[in-house]
Image 1 (cartoon, rainbow, N blue to C red):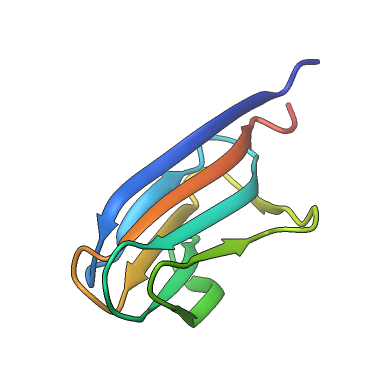
Image 2 (cartoon, rainbow, N blue to C red; image 1 turned 90 degrees about the horizontal axis):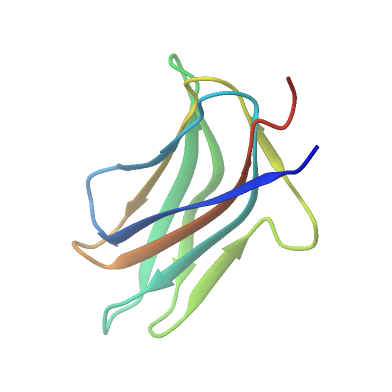
Length: 108
């Protein structure tokens, strides 16, 4: 069975949590790229909400000026189930570009 690779993106994430992706089945995150687009250092949180609780993939992670933070490198994957929401928030307004790579519907 062919895999359905998809991408999700969000520009200029700020201090309010941005919902980047909501799982619609059993989906696998295979990459998350977070880029600081400002002229100051920032921090960011990336977490999954399962409808009741937030589960952090990274909390208060520093991203220096002109830098990018890669989550899930080295072949790591995170499985999300139906209605789980991937959220991202930054320490500064309009400061973070987010790119997420995922595999949709990893099991029937």
